[in-house]
Amino acid sequence: MISKWKQEFLEKATSIFEKDSEQESEEKIDPDPLYARIGRLELENEFLKKSLKKLH
Image 1 (tube, one colour):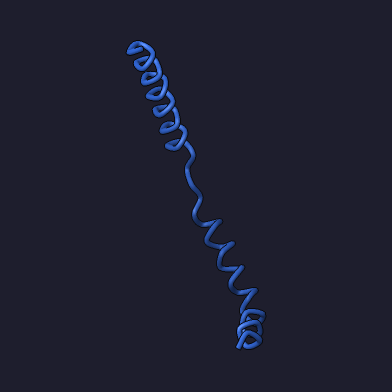
Image 2 (tube, rainbow, N blue to C red):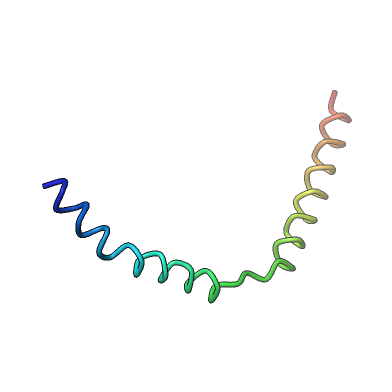
């Protein structure tokens, strides 16, 4: 059973990895919205830290 799976994998391995690399190149992520989100979260985090210090 395992040898059959191995054989199938070896036969189809190149096509499997080629599909993954094609998908990765097609799915380029725009970093600008991510950087904006990081900035907002950092500001929120700093605000919460300052608010916590005021409570103590």
